Amino acid sequence: MLTGMGYARWSGRTWHSPVFRAVWLVFLGFLPQLTAVYLPFTRDWASDELASAGLVWSQAILLLFTLINFKVPGMPVLAVGLAFNLTAILANGGFMPLPFETAQKFVDPNILSTLETGRRISNASKDILLAESNIVLPWLSDRFVSPAIIPYRFAFSLGDIFVATGAFWMCLGIQPVRAHKSGDS
Amino acid sequence: MNKTFNQIVFSVTKLNKTHIQFAMMLLALVLLVLGAGAPEDVGGSGIK
Image: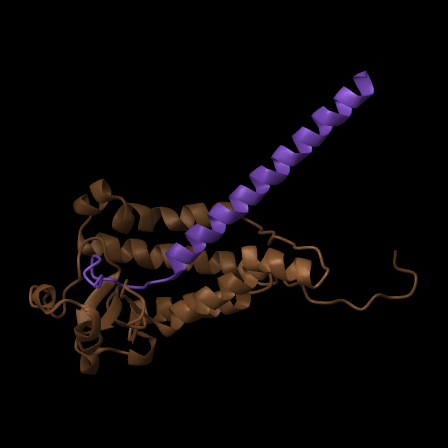
């Protein structure tokens, strides 16, 4: 967002923050994930089946929000990323697949040895650990690892790249340039 | 004096509304990204 403001100032234009329609859908859509994955008290209570259903419903509602706001700059890119993640989750039993081969690249071996293939990583996770050969649509899974120069290591998907790119584009506030018709004020 | 005061009140009211709208948009965007993305750090075990 700061980059967007700086870019707008540099290019002599006014920065426009994105304007969303039906914002309530975001809050409604995030609620199942908040309870099933993020809040410690509720996620301990939720079973994996409930968490999986919550994750799918949550992303479906968020996808609806992106479709309603499809004309917002960057939103189509974010929507594609979300659709990729949702597809990977639906195709692999309700959680995002994390290939075992990818986990080996960034997870401490002592911790990795405690994880069970075919099971959810933890009750705070959206991921399920799977051998790459058992993953449906493996190119949509969390198969990329953050660069080693970054101290905080994590795995991410192609969908995550699209989501981040779309959000960044949105924050830049770049509006499509419209040709002025004669007589326009 | 009264006109100036009214102008200040009007400006502050407008500014607050703009700020609230901006904060709502920012919160919605953060929640959207958190909800749409699915990166994994295995409980922070990737920290080296």
